[in-house]
Picture 1 (spheres, one colour):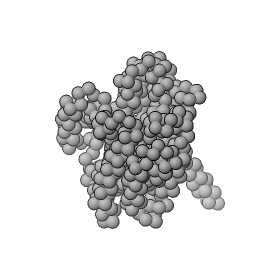
Picture 2 (tube, helix red, strand yellow):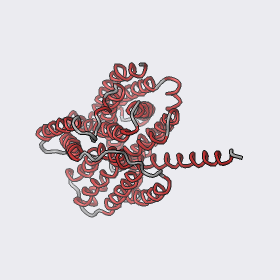
Picture 3 (cartoon, rainbow, N blue to C red):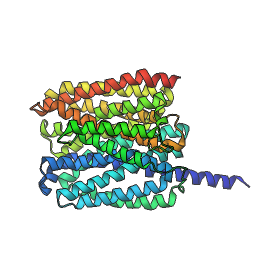
Picture 4 (cartoon, rainbow, N blue to C red):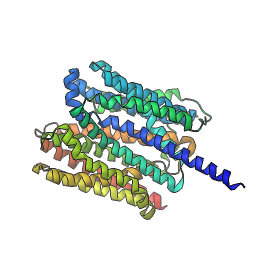
Length: 453
């Protein structure tokens, strides 16, 4: 007599968890998609809006600055006010920003609302990951984090594909227009399905919030965009010192320092930073190499990236099974090793300008990236209290985003004097392998022993 209600309740719970999983994965996908979707459409975008090189770079920099700068705050607000209102409001901000960017008729409007998009994505990303860790436990959590990693990686690759397709056959604007209806549908579903917000004791750390935004945006700006990089970075260093000092003195910090007390979590943030610094070289320079050295148009470039994107998604989805068999840290080591080997292969074969040789390296990168990314996300949230899971998700995503900014700046610096795309691409691949090697050493020295302990 009582089994049916229990069965109905279990089925309802499973249905809600499935919808939450879908919402968070689509949300994470949208944020990353709009980071890379502009890469293959920049030529036509610049021509239509009459953007010079500086304005064109700011189309991406504006998004990256606010995406990085508001990440910590977005995660902390979710901890205080609950995931549901932050998830919904972030989608509204992101959707409005996307629609205005798609309709932009001049540089000022486009750059301004790319920044609005970045704010929405910055609030969305940590709350997507925190929703997963709040909803799932044990092996299920490992599985869904694998899905999360797969859509993050696939989002970057699919962004290149979609951007190239729209730029060739329709308009680069379409890639931004579609975000609005998707965000609207997600808002309606989230309002009906997500559990009511569970507000926690605490209040906004206004000083920490302001300092964190200024510190993160200034260091990103100093690395990529500032005409005075050294003074900007020095100011940023002072802001970071003030921010960290403030976090040790307030009752409800924006970035609780307890997050860094665990060696595995701390090492995962640093390794994520290095890994993202390396990966940005692949995402940024591979499409350029395919267009300039191989002579492909944007759409052919997009098609050339499809095998890598498909393999990355498949491996990331199945990474959880490997973790259950070998442990999180060992799978992470395998991922880092494969990425190092793939970077080295692409650096060596760049001189031949052959797609099939390049494809081999991109497929190896896809497997290694999927394995490393999924396991880094797990390590970044190891043994974290639910009350600060949003803040920890914000730190992890900030490290990932900041790593991309650092990497792009260092790649630009080291390739500035090279005159051919072949030399630039080869140099970027070798530099990426060096970043990944340092990250691998950190995994060996800090994460593997911590996991065994």
